[in-house]
Image 1 (tube, rainbow, N blue to C red):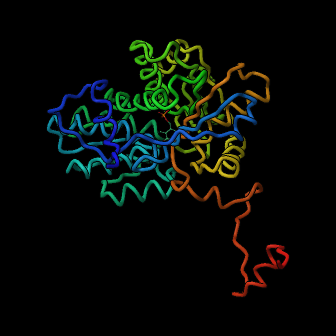
Image 2: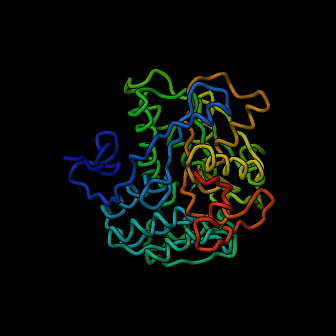
Image 3: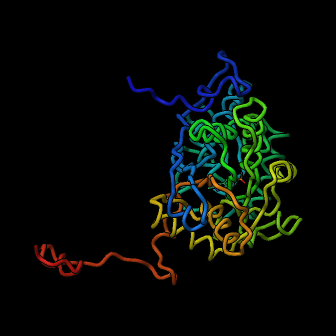
Length: 359
Ligand SMILES: *Cc1c(COP(=O)(O)O)cnc(C)c1O
C-alpha cells in the first residue's frame, strides 16, 4: 500500500518536543520535493544544485512546517485563538491551521503590501484580518503586545515552536541527499528560516548523521537589508514582499547561524530578483513567488563577482509558490503586460502563427 506522508510532527516526533499523547494539528506539511536543477548548476558553475521546493506545502510556503508545531502546542495549552503578524504567508498558514484546530485566527497585515493570492487564503480560511497602517515590523510589535495582554496565542516565528517545526526541512535534505550539501542558500527576511535550518543541521551533526553543516547563505533584498547595513532599516522597500522586513526578530540567531556555519549574508536588487524569478520558471520548471528567487539570485550575483566559494553541492530553498503572487509572471522584461495572441479556431491559422510546416 502507498505510504502517505504524515506531516512533520509525526514523521520526526523523536526529534521534536512532542510525545504520542500530544494533540497534532496537521495538513500533511513537509516532505516537499528536492529538485535537481542542472541549469542552475551550469549558471553557478558547481557540481550540483537542488531546489527545496517549499511552495509544495499545503498552503504554498514553508510557513506550514512551523505552523503545525505552533498551533499544535497552542491547542495543547487550551488556546481558543491564535494571532500572527504577517507579510502574507504566515497569515495564510495560521488561518488554515486554526481552522483545522477549531480555533479562531487573527492576522495583522501591513496595509496594501500583501499579495492578493495570500490575502485570499486568509479570507478563505475565515481569519479576522486587520490591515495595519504601518509595516510588518509594526504588525509584529502589535501582535506581541496583544498576546501578552489578551487571550490570543502568538504564532509568529518568535514563538520557539515555529523554529522546531521549520528545522525539519534540514532533516529532509539530509534524508534525501544522504549528506548535507556544501552550501545552503535561502531568502532572509525575519530570519526565522535560516535560524531553523541552522538548528536542524546542528542536530544532524550532533546525531552523527552528517560530519559538517553546510555554509548557510541568507540573501536579502537590497531595499530591505538590515543584515547588510548592520542595523534595522526604518522604511524597507522591495517588490519581494515576503522579505520586506526592516527589523528582523531572529537577529541574533541568524548572526549565530552565519558565524557557526561559515556562511554569509548578501543582498540583491529587485531587478536581480525578477531576473532569477524568470530564470527559475523558464530554465528549471519551478514557479516561485519573487521573494523565493532571492537565494538563487544572491548566489548568481556572488558567482558573477567571483565571490562564490568553490563548492561541489548546493541546496537552495525556494520558499513559496508562484501562484501566491502571479502578476509578476504576466509581465515581460520591460514590465509590459503579456497577453496570449488571439487566433481563429482553425488548425491552419494556429500552425501559421506557430510557424509550423505541414508534414
Ligand atoms: C516568510 C518568508 C520568507 C522569509 O523567511 P524568514 O524566516 O522571515 O527569514 C521568504 N520567502 C517566503 C515566501 C516567505 O513566506
